[in-house]
Image (cartoon, rainbow, N blue to C red; front, top):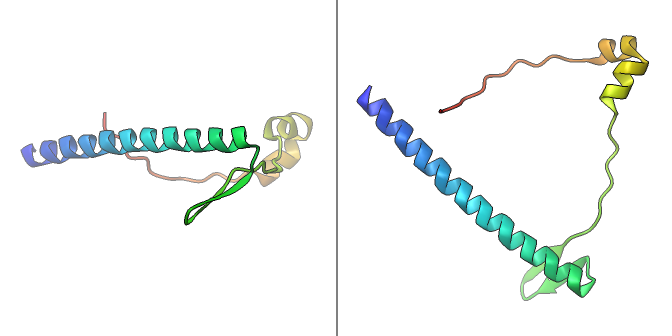
Length: 89
């Protein structure tokens, strides 16, 4: 059990470091996007790097509305997926 506890501690530390790194990366991305917005540019070349920050559109199905308006169709096309979730608390 002690070995597992050590692995769990190490896992949690690695997760904490990864979360910190992700937060730092997100902050830098926000700064880059702000600079592009301020410059009025959707695309920029900075040295060897190409940046793009453009609006995109995506079509989604309003599942709640479909279920309310056409429950039979919603039920016929609903797929249940089983998966396993790993958690450390």
